[in-house]
Length: 88
Image 1 (tube, helix red, strand yellow):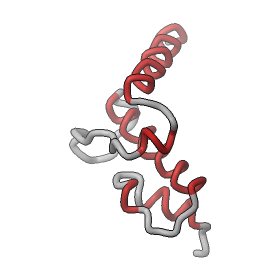
Image 2 (cartoon, rainbow, N blue to C red):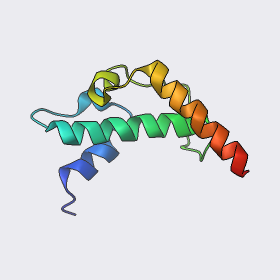
Image 3 (cartoon, rainbow, N blue to C red):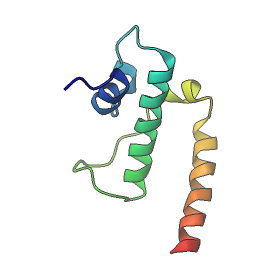
Image 4 (tube, one colour):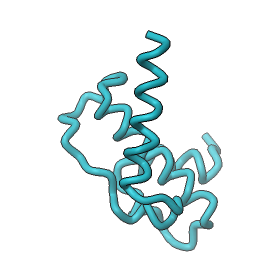
């Protein structure tokens, strides 16, 4: 179908960001990492249903790439949940 690598890789490796093949550029790796985190966070918050068990953890290799820690991510998620609850 001729999709660009960023889209193909985001789909193919959203559950395994470490497996993005070299020599993929950092920008593409970051987008795959963001999709990976978003997928697992939405599943953990029971937003949508991916058809799997939902017991996967975020791959630790994404944190340095995204320049954020897991703790910082959880803090941001808590803020998002508060905002969602305000609207709900």
